[in-house]
Image (cartoon, one colour):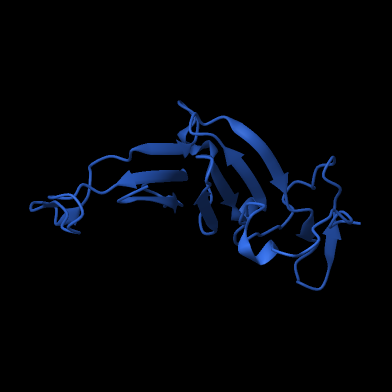
Length: 160
């Protein structure tokens, strides 16, 4: 929305050992001027608190942590697409924080070097500690201009 942005906030040890997706609404001094309120004591712009947050469950603040790779995208339907990169996981959540769907990248590194990779079907689990990384995922509407005059059809699973 107007003057609103969303950010994947990794967190940082030892201060904050949990990750969140935060929506922040920047308070303008006067509507549509681009001039924002600054806290003269802290030398920072913006509100003291987020306007929406998705992250670890109450009482389980450390349960959702991704120290260096993540992405988020607010979708046209108001949902949020979140990539938790070090797990190779993508989820879509509603404004009410309900999970719509989840996807795990089926490709993972098998061993200590980059020369060996393995695959796992979506209905199966990757081995504990499987090294899977996903920088970001994007979700596109059917009316996205790049899809115009193209035949889009399901073909095969990535792990096939």
